[in-house]
Image 1: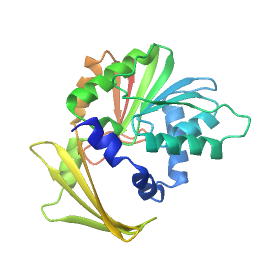
Image 2 (image 1 turned 135 degrees about the vertical axis):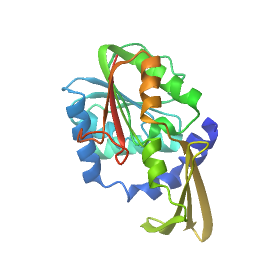
Image 3 (image 1 turned 30 degrees about the horizontal axis):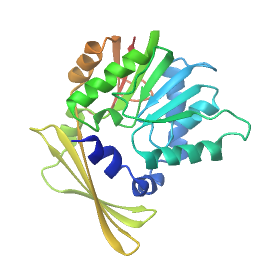
Length: 252
């Protein structure tokens, strides 16, 4: 799975429009409030949002007084992030710093109080890319800084997988959207194929991402130099389990 396939091909303008209606602002504000609480962020805290997408979390964090740097490889997503910042933040307010780069290769210094990797963004690449991303996150944190990761994990996806077709029809900004999902247990890959009409043309987008066990995620963080790895079952810090997503906090 190459960077081009995922960050340039899949995460384009149509992806932003597709998901805009599914990610309600109330959900985003709830997630951001949880991030602030779990990381004990204060006004002025330096936050690095790796794989920031269109700034869904970065801009609200900036609005709460953090000093945010958002990094993403997909230029369409960063265009959306810049527009979101202009639309949401006060005219005289400082904007987040937006950087187009591979989060696993960007030279970083240990100046950040926190790093966030949210909305399953740790999974959109190979194992080597995931390890590089976490190593770079560790390099960006000052001593005692923390990382927060939110993602799905293998036990949850395998348990939720169905022997029959998992097909969902939802409304999107383009009209009816057909989503077909399946899990490949040997490869440990989750797939989602989306089909919709755009300007009268049928468009298909196929997302493939790796899902890791909780033990693998913990070991990745330890190998990257993190300590005190804590797993929660969601942004509300409920107990982690096979029926929950994974929210992980670790200390540099």
